[in-house]
Image (cartoon, rainbow, N blue to C red):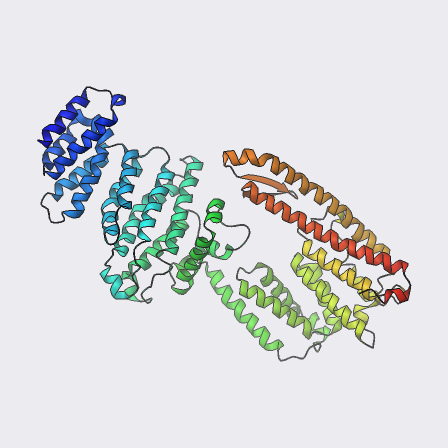
Length: 582
């Protein structure tokens, strides 16, 4: 009866054009097909599906039968008709509209809970992969939707904790992880192979979706997963294999983990998916922590790490520790300046500067900074003076120069408090050193933002000198050289600030005027500042960057105004009035 009913509905629809199919037709077809399955008329139903005359009808309506077929496969595991159910599922995947099938399969994946989650995922991953590969448009979106749905369901499964739990795999998580890798591989290969042939934007979107999936997988299940010890058993650990494949996917789509780990936390990321970063910042941090653990602790795919990075980290660490051990045995101010004439002795602080500014490992950078300060403390006054001149001339780094300028200020303070003169940080010697500090390298054209640390340190030093040294006493020699300082530093700084602020204010205005159009198109935009283009980012983030720059200029301007106010008071007041300035 059910078969005859289905054939009657099909016969009526055969005379209709595809666009004339009504919602009622879809409903009747689904009910009749469901009854055929329930009553066991599987072979007849397969014949109807295979009939070439029914091709258009099956293409439009057949996807409604996928749900009933899948449920039969899940419930009737010992049924002798299972081979017919599998055949029917294969035919429907082959003949039905892939867009409708995709949504139908994902709905089926979302339905179950508990142990049935893994059962339906393992059953439908292959059909799902086939359906997505048949899609001609929006493949990246479909891949992303599928991976997100699969991950959401897998994240509900408990992660096995012990070796026994991993081996028994009661909830099927380990099996699903293995199957999920096979599901994803063709899309990773598509990104690799289609770089020249495919539409670039679509290829980038697919990379974006795969990157999101990899990060999600690093958090769940890999962040909480336990791994076998690194031995022969490690190769049989399904979660370790899953981790290795995920890390391999990252490298394959252009995001090798060494670059990602060492650049994490910097303003400029090694990937351009800013929307992903903003929405999932906490997840990103967890994923990066998981990635670092898998590589450095578990040793998974560590062979991808450039050997030079691994060896240099160890050598630098040992070198810094050895230097600390030696310096702690020496009294402060006891190392004679003549030692700096020995090439190897001078290369030590220069090497520390390189580690401070170039090493990707934060702990080593901080340790090197502390060791440079310890090294400075051990030198005598002339040695400190000589080293300061050397580093100011060679470091080419605003932060390092600010650090040296702060040390110069400290040495001036010590010299002014001593009863005996210290010629290296007062008078003509100090003025020679200040010539390297109180000037702008390129005059008013100097990049104030890039040199902001150095400029702030220089202004603070000048402020200190104005407060501590009266024009009458002129212990430091500041007041003798004040005209040169004004021409080489203060006036160009005023001009540079006016130019920089005007430029950034214009960029902010331009960005605000264009932001509405950019938001409508959801495109990223770029801004050129100081001759260099700010990396592509959303308009609201660009505005934050531009306002941050303006804030820096305002801060410099505020300190500059205070310095000039103190200078005016000093040059016009009596010595007695100067006592009250602090």
